[in-house]
Image (cartoon, rainbow, N blue to C red):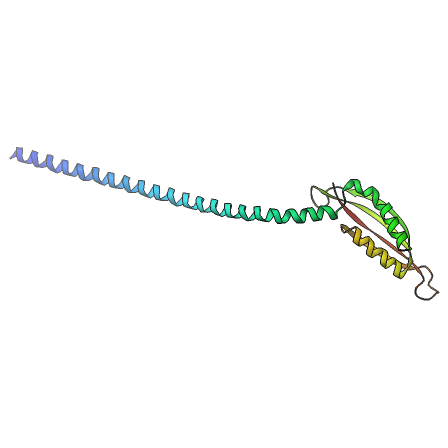
Length: 180
């Protein structure tokens, strides 16, 4: 009987060993499947993120062509830094064509006002003429120089005792923007 018990113990031990090995294999196989599933989920998320990034890049590239049109338009409207030397001369000709006297002076230059390429220079100006002529001058000034900001504007009647339509003095100061 001892042989039978030994044999039975061996068979039970072998079966238990097989069950333990199968259990360990199943556990490790399941852990591997979970790990691979997590990797696949992460890769899908990265793939979706890259796809969205590619779509966004495509939209940006389409918008670049549109933006280039506006960039060229803005560049044509904002004077270059070197072109600022001609501003007083141009304003003198505008003032003569509108029958107003002009005093114009540049002030302090501020580089990189609105970004890496755009700077500004302060200016002060004064005009003397009739109400209508000064209005025409200011309209022509605005038409020729879009990129400016007027900080202060003052109108003084030079002949307060006379009737309307006499000469007035308009003084203004501000900033003229330029591309470097």
